[in-house]
Length: 375
Image 1 (cartoon, rainbow, N blue to C red):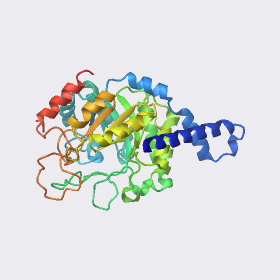
Image 2: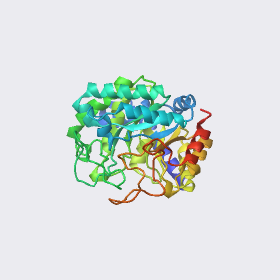
Image 3: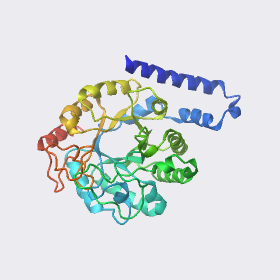
Image 4: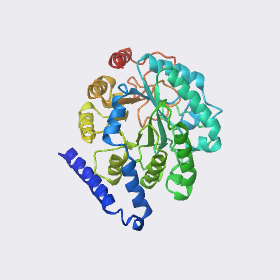
């Protein structure tokens, strides 16, 4: 019942906005600019029919969130000094070997600001490697997530060393929370988003633009909704051939969720929960009549396992993007909140392969291969 209430109220919001837009054409110039932008974005959003045609033309989307095992965060993955195409080649070969056709990656505004053209050359190298292994890319611009316990903003140069035993100890926000909350800093973010999307707007190596990861996360005081609205506006101006999305939290009725349900071409969500919690989420999002992709799942100790979740996603044709590929500097195999010096857990949290390329669990790999072989 709760799911239906959320659906009805958000749909009602869409109807009201659409009706208001139609009735206000004659007096359009009297509206505040942001209202005009909102109406314009709703009109420019892909129709459900267009989104579903796009989705039907794709194989079942299956893959992982990918950070090079030799990088502790997005900056170390992409900056020139530490970009590691040799490792990427090996790891994309592993991904292809188990049937993955998609990777989701995070980029960083500071890398672009320092050297836009060099950054795009490295992106092209990455895309070429992925294409060689029949893998497409979900591109993620911004994220509020940050597991660093130090009170610093993101910076270029040598990144911190991993803290032994600590899950994801060096991940950074993009942009830093100070820039998220300061509209005076958004000009460079706009140039960044427009440049990257314009460059690759017709590139079929890119599957999907994820404009913002976990925008609801208020880590380090980030208040994201005003910036999120702008980012969608910048992307809609470019009108890429790939769909737009940002992660929906779901489970509550709030302004951000309704904005995303009204503006995303494809609905994307995260779930590190058991199958009993995943099923109602999927049903809620399917009720909106658009493609649905889970862009983060798989936390074994929490019941979010390949065995429990992946067969359901395949049966419902829900895109399935697990977290982690090869154990490395991110320490993704350790659980959230692990303490410094913790021993390697018997049950890994994330990741599929050990650093030498051996599977953590051969039965998981067999299952993934079996479910993906029809693609």
